[in-house]
Length: 451
Ligand code: DOR
Image 1 (cartoon, rainbow, N blue to C red):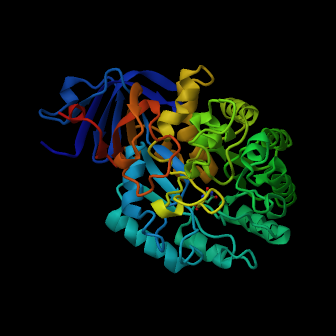
Image 2 (image 1 turned 180 degrees about the vertical axis):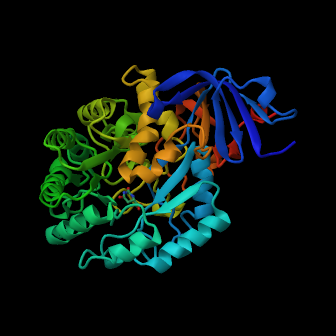
Image 3 (image 1 turned 90 degrees about the horizontal axis):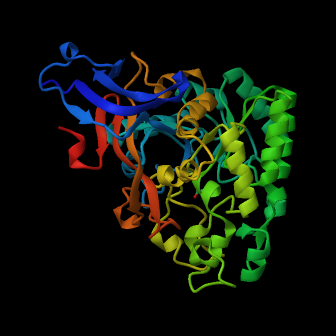
């Protein structure tokens, strides 16, 4: 029978953009959603491939507006092939990749290279993000118009902030004309200095240099002022502090054109994880302390910060969840805490981590799905709406997951080359079973999912 058809029957269809949360069936035809609702026998051709999704959630595929695919230049950390496989295993059907590659994505030729590699190797959609400044050096604006014409979906020097305020002003001014957001990694280096974790009692106990919350908040306040001045499209990357949520809420109330994201790790684990024992206090540092897989930029912060971030996300002040998937090769983490690379491999644990907010009653399932689909699409602009909805006529980018299935995180099973996760050995509740892009199954966890 034609593989151009696929029936997903009896799933709990959660499509927040259209306010749908009900048991339903979906017929996919020629890569697009054809029917959502009751699919009657007369429209189902004999032998139509069928997924029985009874007891499972069926939602638009997740959109990650912030990840590191490392290609070109750092293929020993990740490639477009392995990164998109990891994305598919995590339920992501669109990935926006950051430009801290080598060469950086600061001209159309590199964008074209990524597009070619995507056509050849990717199993989910890949959208490049262009640099704000030439070479990510922070000295002069990149050719933003050339990058926009080449198809970048955002601009960022992520890994580093746009430090020079006048350059940030110019970038925001152009972003208003181009209709493309500037994603800033807010970190005032003169405050963060050589910090390797959050400033606070844990850093003091461990004797590690800390990064104060003000490093994030000071730059964020500057960026909000500049967005107000220019009318530009500001997007704030990976918020980590309670104060950042306050600043964001105030800016929103004033009508500033600003959006923001938060990462699964900043919503679920704290700086106490650097002490070992997975954040459970045991009177001091454990033998598992200084685990370099907890080293991430911006850093894991206090329980209070986590609470406020969750409130901000649940309320919708923070628009979306983004992974900041930052895969690293083993040796860059097998060094002292001070020397280790910053970053966590997140794509494959993002759903299980984020679902903790649902299981603990802090957020509804449909709100969480919104923050993984409609929210990120809103940040990127109207062209992305069709990837965030299960509406007849839209591309069939779909994820099917079991929100209650428990599984143990074993990084050796990751599709990502990056095995750097502090969640190794923990149990997550919520598992992706099938990921579909353009109507094609690109990931399937269990043989029962297709008949
Ligand atoms: O932890 C991080 N790693 N934060 C960043 O901003 C950059 C990223 C990377 O590229 O490894």
